[in-house]
Image (cartoon, rainbow, N blue to C red):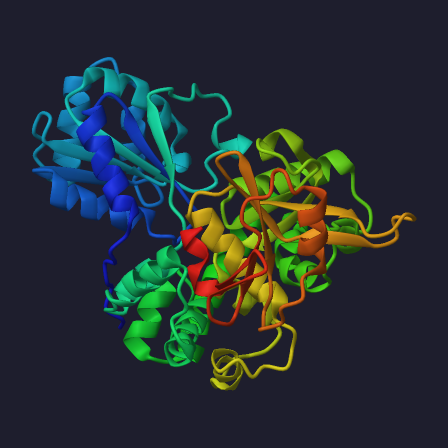
Length: 448
């Protein structure tokens, strides 16, 4: 049986800020994909920051517990019931009540308004698929919520989990000084980063790797998580079409198309129905959507083409397992090749996925840009990602190797010279500046 570790997560500091600043005036709602670590961090927070806490897991709670929230006329009695059922004494302004998987008990989420107004205790809600209509139908969504999103472990958190507290400060210093690290150090850092890509940032898969030091067994854990996501999507959409759209993500990215093409998977389906499935998929937070921008200017969200997008998995470790789903991993050969960068297949789409994950974790919304490469509009240039800094747009091009040609980036710089900030190539070699372009090793992406 594996040891369950509690990993250090950056979101913990955000939770402390909420506690110190809001002082019970709002509940904290932690959204995120299943198995991303929401329940664990909420319980750890309750244990460390309060005199006592009650954690109600609505996935396991009895009907007796759920029925408590049907009638809140007497909150004194409500709190007595909870203390008796969970054998925990609550202390005014010193106790926390956690509603875990709150979407499974809509009445409890609606009750937040009155519980917060009462003011005796603090409240944290955690949930997956929170925004999907069937989970909020017929209830009043409380406005007394501070909402934050929890993502898979970023690269620094992964390094912390492996006991490495030195690598990220080194990477950060090199990035801030715009100085290369040197060939030997860079090769070692790329090796560590490829390990992060393979294991991913889901706490269960990281725990499996640390426990077994075996990538095949780690892959088995990742596949269990993917199957859980597929099962969830089949519950949301009984036709199975939503799960098909999810399973097709690696194949869609591998084709190097300028957008996700659902009709190649579903053949024929009502456009509005397909749009609803994509919305449910986006709300699930198991994926990250990158939208095509029609005008690369500050305020990218104002120029979002809602019909043109790419879809990435929120965790690249899961993405790799899904991409090689048809291969039964009984030994580490595939992973060894990926780890040593010797796999013959073009892995550009894998690097695009990890860059999307790192940008999202760093607080960026995801946008890309396409523009004609000829007058007939038969060919198009593409900028993989756009980020904003101040009044400038930073175009990012992702390379899965040391390949340094970047025609799209060069033409974009010419066309939009007045708004371009720092043109950047994210690739697998050491940091360098050349002809006004920043060549950035992929493990520095999260610092942009």
